[in-house]
Image 1: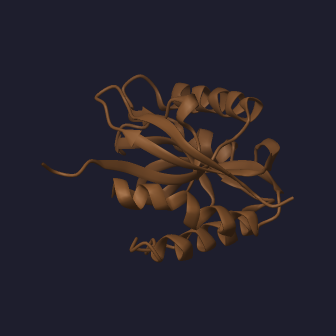
Image 2: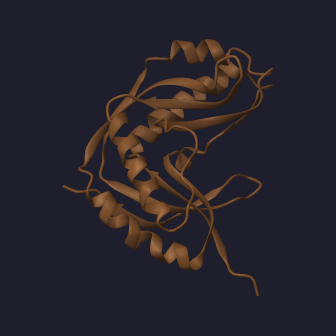
Length: 194
């Protein structure tokens, strides 16, 4: 009998006011892209900032994750994040991911992500090879030739201030992939230090 595995990631979530603002921003971007655009927009309830994606995790390592991560996360003080601007990865010329960025708090998020990766490496998880860039994925572009006026709208919102919020918890999340989109479940919430 094969061992159960859970698709897992470590994330930071945002309050409803920020998510509502991001949803309005998504709607503007979607209108600019037009009906023919092949963009899969992230459901607002699923918008988050990933600190580390762990992939399929066996039950034994999953049970150990909170014990390994909790003391590391608690060493980081609570901080504020300002969600600002829009852009694409890997580049405007070859857009694949539409994102909202972070200004204030980006260095704290990077430090938190590095600490999380270092802690999970003790359980055998590979660190992310790409450099950490604090962002919230808003959509994934399936065909960059059919994006209408999206690039103009992204440029127009390059410096938009979405909002400021306090980051005081890191979540261990599971993800079940479904045809209509992923279903995320919070497995554990780990508080930052005071």
